[in-house]
Length: 98
Image 1 (cartoon, helix red, strand yellow):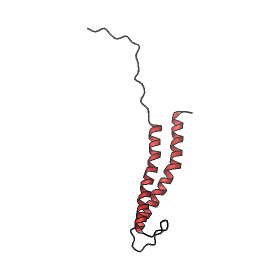
Image 2: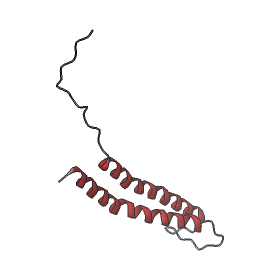
Image 3: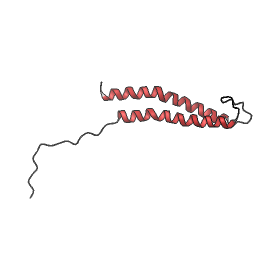
Image 4: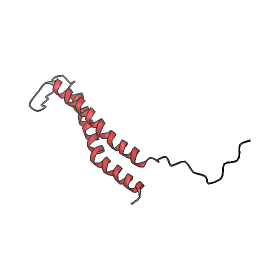
């Protein structure tokens, strides 16, 4: 397998395993953060009906989702970038100094 093919496969796998759950976490985090701001909303976060727990869960979900979305971007960048090659060498003799 070529390094480019390996990079593409790694990027696709990272996107499926990290990017998609990251988008879901960001959507749910945004929903929790918005719902926590509604007055008289019925909130139940792990048995707590405090709006601050929903806000904390929302902000945590947004942060976790952002990290999960950054992982496939980093994998794609590092796997698919063009690596700098070695400087070309020349076998020609060096001209004499004047």
